[in-house]
Image (cartoon, rainbow, N blue to C red; front, side, top):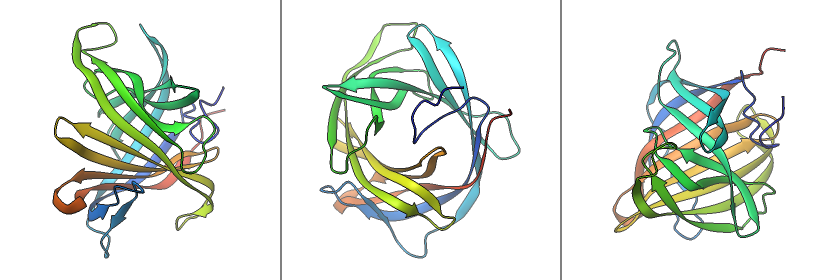
Length: 215
């Protein structure tokens, strides 16, 4: 099997198990980093990501099924490769309600460099088989935040932290911080719904275990 990315392999049959927390905090519009009030917040549940390949009318995607631990059903996201200028990246190409987004929303560049940014103005279509335009110019902004030799409490080695900012008609709406560990993939996701004065409420997913695909 071929990894999608050294830091986000998404190998079919692999499973990432996360602890999910509610969070309250803020974000820095300059750095795009999220901070969380301490104590962190309330544990909500366990969540798993399961990966597989999927053939679509727009090509092969990496399918990411999200479901609570103990269940087998939940929303599915399609991860896709994209390019902006001379930067190749992986990101969200089909969202959980089936909208086709191109270019995808960037999650991590092919060769991350701390401080690099991308601005995406994506055409959002009803689905990968229905070309009806839902949003003609959906704006998102990406930034590679930092590299860590070691990150987290477990800990994970050789990690990149990135950020994604989503915009609505009136300005920024949602901010995400991701941490990707080499040969593992996503090990941490912070999701912030932006309020007044750069405050956020949202969720954090913190990886507990990673299971490699069956040999």
